[in-house]
Amino acid sequence: MADSRSTEKWLLALVGVLIVLLIFSVKGTLDTRRWKGSFRNEMAQRLDLEEQISRFENERLAWQKQEAKLKTDLEEVRRQAEDLKTSLEDEQAAKKSLEDQLRSAQAVAVSAAVPVRQDVTF
Image 1: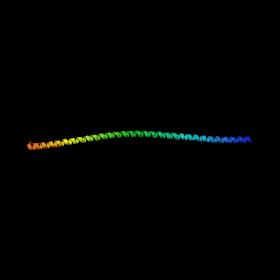
Image 2: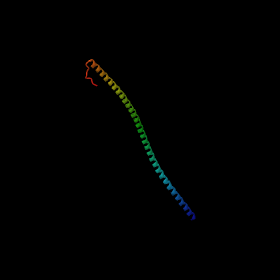
Image 3: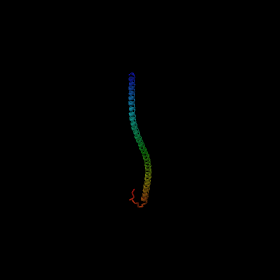
């Protein structure tokens, strides 16, 4: 009887240890599944963020190219404006010279009594 009681105690202890091991095993499996799900979600979020970063980087590069083109265009417009300003100054100087020549010609004509057309305008 003592042997059967001792055997029963060992069996109960063994069953208890097996139940504890089974519980730890099930808990570990559930934790692993949860971890795998979290890992998949995190990786999906990382990929989404990488795609967004790539898209933003491409947009930034496009904006930089557009900015460089606009700066080049602005410099071209400034150069053209400067050329036009110089051309205008040359035209105004030529006009003034022609007006001076006309006045001197009119003065000579008046002094020489040569009729001069008065309908010339500028």
